[in-house]
Figure 1 (cartoon, rainbow, N blue to C red):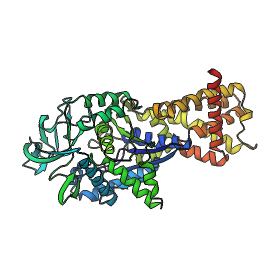
Figure 2: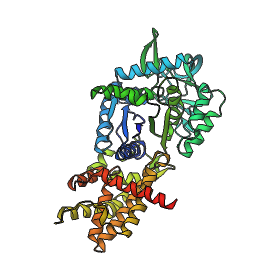
Figure 3: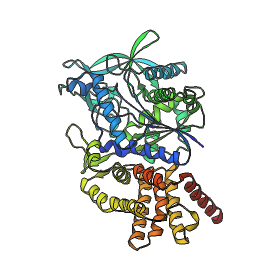
Figure 4: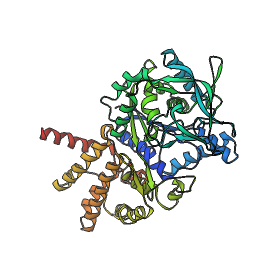
Length: 508
C-alpha cells in the first residue's frame, strides 16, 4: 500500500464553474484518486477555495460587493458543483480567515527564511494613480517579457512564466483602461536560484508530461530567478510576521493551502496523527493536478518550499493539462461563452458528462468541446449501452454472480487486452484519463456487440469486469451495479492482476 496526497489547484471563487475547469485538473485528480483507492492505496484528496486571490477582489469591486462575501458565495457554489459532478475531495478548505491556512503560510515562510531562501529588495511596481490600484495581478494587463502575449504581472497564461515586472511593457489599468505608472516598493522574494540543484534532481526521473519538462528546463536555465512573494498595499493574505504587517500573495500560499486542508481534515475526523503520517513519510507521493498556466508555482515554488522543511516528503509530481475550447474559442465568463457545470448536469448524468470530458481531456494539447458532438455520443454510444446493461441485470431471472471459471479463451483474451492498457494508463508514470476512457469505450462497444449478437451470457460476464474498471470514470452507474450484484471489487482486481502477472511470467 502506497501513500498519496492528491491535490487540485485551488479554484478562484470569482464565478461559477464551467466545463473548461472540469475537463482539466478536477476530473483527472478525482479519477486518479479513485484508481489508487481501487488498488488499495492510502490517499488524501484535497483542494481549497482561493479566497484571497486578486481576481476575487477585482470581481467584487466590479459588482460592488464585499470581497470576502463574494469569495464565500462562489466558493460554496464551486464546492456544490464539484459534488454534483461526483468530484469527491476529502476536504475542501475555505481559506478566508482560516487559522490553519495562516499558520501553514507562516510555517513555510519561517522555514524558508531559516534556510536563507528569502531576500528583500526595492523594485518598481505598476500603479494606477487614477484608480488608486496596484497592478500586481488582476487590476492590470501588460506584455509578457518572455512570450510577448498579453498577461497580468503574476503569471502568463500563454507561456506559464512568471513575468519580470520591470521588463513587461504596455501596462494598462483594467479599471480606467489608461497606462499605469510605476512606484518603488520594498518587497520580499524567494531565491529560486538557490533551489536549482534540488529541482534538477527532483525532475530527473519524474513522470511529468513533456510540455512541463520543457518548461522546467527553460526556467532553470535562467541564471538568477527572484520570485516576489508579497504585495505591499495590495490584495492577498494579511499577516503579522516578526512584529511586522505583511501581505503575501496566494501563489506563494498554495502549498500552505494543501497543508492546512490536511491538518483541518484529520483533526475534524479525530485522527490528527494522520496529518504527519502523510506529510512526514518520505515515501508519500504528492501529486498536484493543475492547468499548465499554474506550472511555475506548483513545479518550481512548492517543491522548493517543501525542501526547506526537515522530515517532509520531497516526492512531488505535477500532472498538467492544456486548455479546452468551446466551439473553437476560449471559454470566457466575461463574454458568457461557457457551458456551466450545473447547467449541463440538469440535462445529462454526471456519469455521461465525466466519461465524455475524459475522452476529450486536453492532456497534451488543446482540445475542443461541441455540444452536438457530445449529445450525439451520449444518445448513440453511452446511454443505450449503459441502459441495456442495467436493464438486462434488472430483468434477468437467474442468479448473477462473478465466477472466474466461466470465461472462455476468447473472452479472457479480450479482457486481458483491455485490462493491460487500462492498468498501464492508471499508473502515475503514464496516467491519462483520456486513454483510460478510450479503453472503456472500446469495452462498452464490445459488450454492445455481444448483446446485439445474442450472446447475452458473455455480455453479462463482461459487464462484471466493466463496472469495476469503469468506477473511477463514471462512479454512480458502477457503484449502483456493484451494490446490486454484490460484486467484490478486490476479488475481481486480484484476479485481473494475477492474470497479468502470470502472462508476464510466461512471456519472459
